[in-house]
Image 1 (cartoon, rainbow, N blue to C red):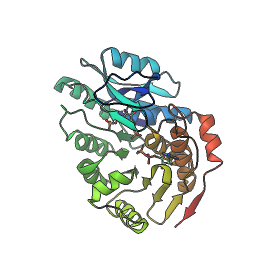
Image 2: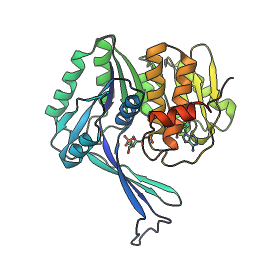
Image 3: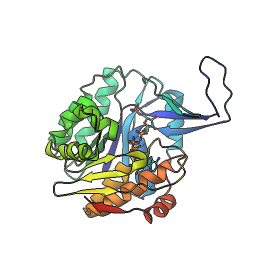
Image 4: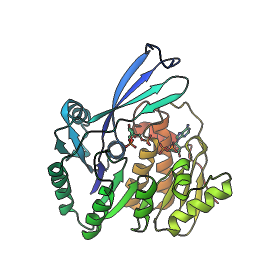
Length: 303
Ligand SMILES: Nc1ncnc2c1ncn2[C@@H]1O[C@H](COP(=O)(O)OP(=O)(O)O)[C@@H](O)[C@H]1O
Ligand SMILES: O=P(O)(O)OC[C@H]1O[C@](O)(COP(=O)(O)O)[C@@H](O)[C@@H]1O
């Protein structure tokens, strides 16, 4: 089974307007609410690919209830830990530029955390846990390390999509996949990634430091995949970007869902690129139909 973990889920409130003027009353042209949070996005994309998975994390209050209602999918089992606080609302303002305000998230009590950790006791070596996204501010920042410890005790494997020190520490535990974007890779190794050679140098470092597969996503400039043996480049695909939130999460779902079925690295990368791009070209997480349409345009080269 694939388990996704979203410690800090969200409702993503997306508002569109022509221009945003700070310090004034602005009137929106439209607004939409989508389920959000990186692990939840991974779960939803896996659902589109008809891959069974279970979503773990913390949900609470009226926002948590709404999120739960919107996550109805036959391939997605919800096994969230209920909390007293309200699940956060993240504000995404789409005007001339995109501005995001991601909320801190609710407090998690020691008792709620203990109930959440009990779930890890059922893991076996057949399971893969996808750990994604930020840690709520009021939760101990070592929570990722604690989860990794439990995952390894059970012999399960994991994918991790986080940043900075949490990612650096996790690399030594041999994640199946990591997927920093350009900014996250630069921050991880404290470098500016000015050239293509820098990207290749520091992308390869993720493998040297322990990752089994590493995708470096480059938004509208494509993506790189590093494996133990080789490296690939996916050419960027042109299209109309609707809402790029969740594009990276969709890549992770596309890659790991396909790899666990086939262990075919190249095919997994192609589905990853199709999934990420299809989500960038959709308002919400991409549908299976959109992914299949984009898949026809994916071109991968060895570099
Ligand atoms: N503007 C875009 N045009 C085409 N493809 C995109 C665009 N933005 C994202 N993608 C696709 O989605 C992938 C992940 O996007 P990226 O923005 O790099 O990740 P993240 O959401 O983690 O920051 C990219 O590697 C690319 O394949
Ligand atoms: O956990 P964080 O880092 O606050 O991010 C949460 C946000 O990330 C998202 O999951 C989107 O992630 P990406 O744009 O990085 O793929 C949103 O749905 C959510 O609002």
